[in-house]
Image (tube, rainbow, N blue to C red; front, side):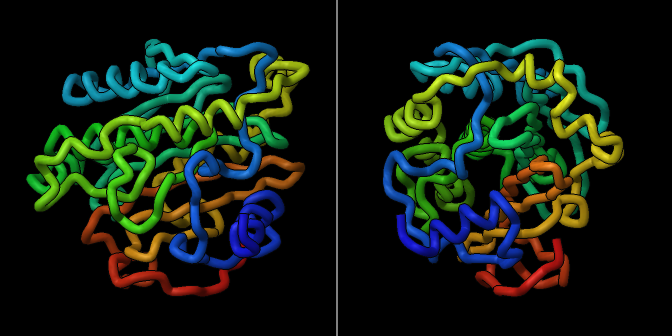
Length: 291
């Protein structure tokens, strides 16, 4: 792990560096693509992550495939359960809510958010923006599966496996199954490195599990403001701590204090602009933001 990688990790943990850093500035080696030490608390492996189904028939097959793919891990299983979310895809304690709606021309294609209490994930959400997926650019099965698989993978504590836009044949890379690549099935499933990284993240056992943490009232959702935030745009995501060189991927951290935070991974549409109206595909613009 190089110095830049360590500093970015530190920014996520304590928000000491509220600086946008290009993902190209750090090298991600196989089996090391995780964010900090964020994980679901559990006392035994394998454990089960519930995926709340808040999607319609256009997405059911992709959610089912992603769930089946990630369940091939030796340390975790996923199960699809009835969704409990509202129109904003509000997170539910102890599980991941998966939603697909027309969220508008707001620039993002897919989102994954996780609530963190200490180093433990207490809940998560995945959002697919049908405003873009209903267009000819994104409405193809390979791009739908790539984005669904990736956003669900983020909710387990996984980062991207590569950052240069080339395919590592994993859904956790920056490859885009659009345009000339629309017919490609590359990068639509996890690969061996993803499963190996999950084994590393969950190699230790905790003295308690997420259900106990939630019952103890120390989850981030115990903060009243949490329920009032839709997490639908940059103004609600906190500090942008990382952006890919092509501008298509970003990571934001919203800090609530008391060692509680929300991390949001963003997949931008190819033609998206940032909050200053500048095309994100032009590359990174390093700037300082207030937490």
